[in-house]
Amino acid sequence: MKNKTGTALYYSIKEKILERIDQGYYQVGGKLPSETALCSEFEVSRTTIRLALQQLEQEGRIYKLQGKGTFVAQPKIQETLTLTIKSFSEQMKSIGLQAHSEVLSIETIPATLFLANSLDIQPNDPVFRLVRLRFAGQKPYQHSTSYVPWKVAPNLIHDDCSGSLFELLKTKYGLKLLKSIESIEPVIPTLPISKLLGIPENTPSFQSESLTYSTEMVPIEYSSTIVRGDFAKFVTERYYQTN
Image 1: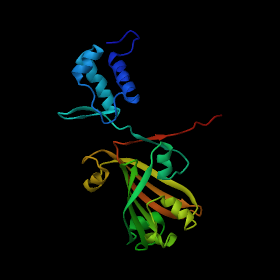
Image 2: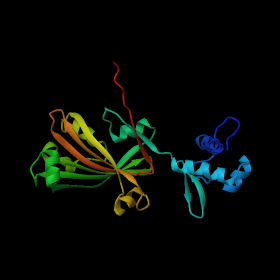
Image 3: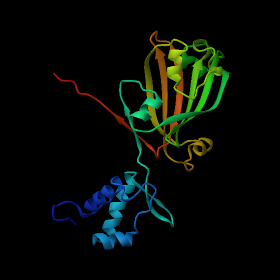
Image 4: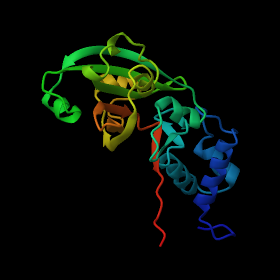
């Protein structure tokens, strides 16, 4: 069924509900009216309302709790993947959120064969393993594990690593950063990481792996980061060549 403008009726209802969410009429975390109430208000069938709500749920704008109703979801953080490297704090600031990190642990470990190959060092060479929980606003957002060769930052274990690691490596250790090679793939976090991120077990999330080089093309950090999937989306910015 379509309305007078030729738009599918359920889509028109969806857009009206979305407009109310964006305008704050329906607050984040607040409960939406029941299907029956929405049917009455918009004078449409339950099937139409359900189609509208299903689309909103698929887009991550609402969520359902069994036996409790339908609620407005927290908008996802949009991270733009560009050619310019930004720290976590800079990324969050650009979208209007305060960021901070909690250091869960930092220790010196012998490099595994994988770390040795990645960081261009010898197996069993000393490497710092830094584990942090990063917050967007007051919400835990990322679980990040960084590996830094001891030889590039020998005093790192005594430093304050709750801020930007890249900024610390630049200002204290004189490292000039050239580039990071990053990959992103879907993952199901382990139960301990899910608990730290405050998400239900088996919540689909993202795993970001990156390898950062200095201007001398020396690998200075390998990191593996779990980003909660219910709170993030990644956007790429690409340009087409012009003839």
